[in-house]
Image 1 (cartoon, rainbow, N blue to C red):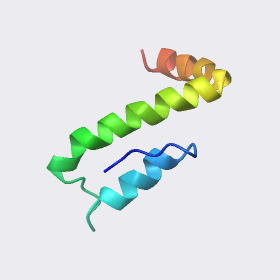
Image 2: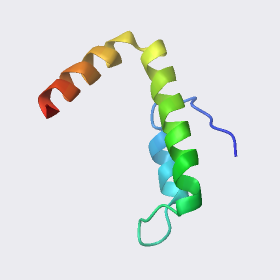
Image 3: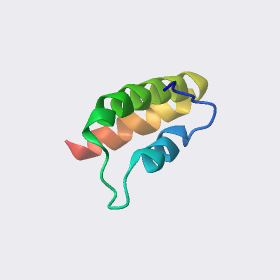
Length: 63
């Protein structure tokens, strides 16, 4: 299954597709999800540099 990151919410949408009715991601898809998520996030940051700034702020609030 290929990862398409044409829109910002591609990862969230794909997550919904892969979840079963109880909202649990099948184990065999978790690695693929993480791979896609990272790829989408990376693409999002490249396309929108301001997103990187927002992420830094977000992660700094978690620490």
